[in-house]
Amino acid sequence: MEKLEHIGIAVKDIDKANTMFAQLLGRAHYKIEDVESEGVRTSFFELGGVKIELLEATRDDSPIAKFIEKRGEGIHHLAFQVEDIRQSIVECRQQGFQVLNEEPKKGADNKVICFLHPKSTAGVLIELCAESKG
Ligand code: ZN
Image (cartoon, rainbow, N blue to C red):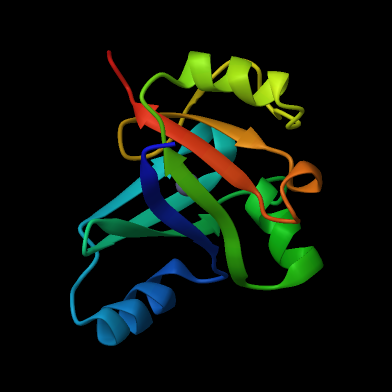
């Protein structure tokens, strides 16, 4: 793992959350991006090299809709940047972490991503992310 890349926060209303976080952080979000495959709309803030990713469900069957239904709004995942995501997936599996998607998938912000099941990581959903190369 190279660094904490971002913290993902599940929100019910991304416009409201954008306004609140802009106030809190003293800066506006720099991008909004839909990830169709995941059924989410994302918004990003940058602060001292770490990002905050707000996540709003765009469909009822979105993982974010399910998360909010079960647990309400709040911290959804921590994302760590890795150099080579395929290599990291192999290593995590070897170390006994439960990898949720063996094949890296396209995330927001020009990233390829993979999730580790919170059961194997102290209840915290972990995202591995790397710059998409193409
Ligand atoms: Zn994320």
